[in-house]
Image (cartoon, rainbow, N blue to C red; front, side, top):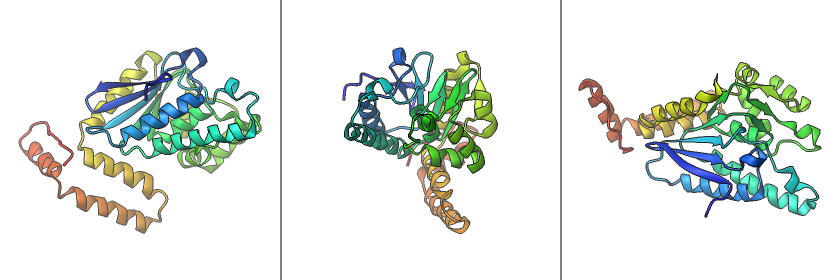
Length: 260
């Protein structure tokens, strides 16, 4: 697919950045962008050598949510068809096998906030704002936002955030656990790029295993989650990368992980 509303970059070896590229409309989520994001996330699932993904926006804003001008006057049938594209897009993002980091500047509203929550963690620029305004529009989040938010910040904070439909600052988002750090706007991209590059330098099978354990384990009881952890642990210690990791430590050199 030729992309019109997003852009793919490779800011570091093994790192891919997906960039929302509609800065003139605050990167609002259109039907076309939904199709393009679905294609991008799907293609990344089998991309050789992929170690980490960064999600960010071009221009002043991360992503302002669904394009309400496009939705104005939509029939119920057209709305449902569009939302199915967005649902598939969100599921494809969640299925990404490597860590996904959001770099949020400006507005992350509605679907933009939900896509931030669907990342594994996030950093925000000073002045960024997060919101799920759907209760003020007669709808509710429908891309996993209610469940991902609850898992990130707890049910009491999630209920307040969802039902007031009021935006919060980057600093408040850090306080409640929605983001991992707040940095000056001019440092945001380099900060996230540095974290992504650090992840990319680690053993890729270990990183993928850790993502699976953290994501899947939270929905299991403790005994089942620990069984899952051991299942992946026993796979990892038999790998060539485990042998390389131990050898490089003893030889006082940087490891050369191959994902095998």
